[in-house]
Length: 266
Image 1 (spheres, one colour):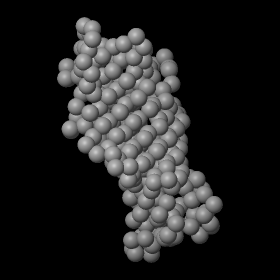
Image 2 (image 1 turned 180 degrees about the vertical axis):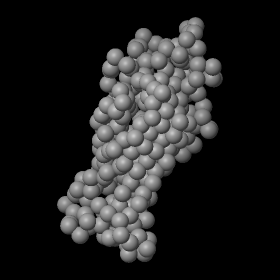
Image 3 (image 1 turned 135 degrees about the vertical axis):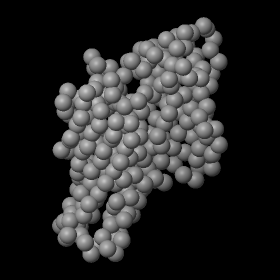
């Protein structure tokens, strides 16, 4: 495998934004019906499970021209196109990703030269799915019966709680559209800013930007993701994902398509 290919894809292992959960801690200054507000917030977002999704499978087709950029050559592309990726999300929303390799790439596969490609694609796609699922399969808000502190101001609502020793804050506007989710840990800070499209069925995640920094300043990751959708069996499912990353001042891009969906609905 071309060394530059391995190096470039290794960037995607660290550059995908960490999966985020709910929110952080601010004292409420007014009486709020937390359970009702959280229930309303969850209903504001398009949710594939509510729309009838049971499970799905899809092929994943990387755009190697985008990944490799000017380093692309015919021999490398022939090898990369001999790798085939797919994924599945089951009825419990569990994600799995798979790959297979054509006979053409058998020698490279046997030598372990393709391992960085497998790992890079798996991490890029799985971490995208983790963030995407938060908005499209589950919810960026906690269960209405869970512990969550809420502060409401003139133009913002902040949902707060502690998760795994991290301080997590979800900020929305008055219409419950998430503007930012922040996570503060012992040695890092992270921020996710979603791009939401307003649709009759609820907010749909169209992309997001991410920022991850260590407190020492030794590591910084910037991330920008855009998502195009397609309608399959009446469901809005991802079609194309484009990712731009900057890790320790090194920029990289990756793009892939979700194709050949097999979808089970209620």
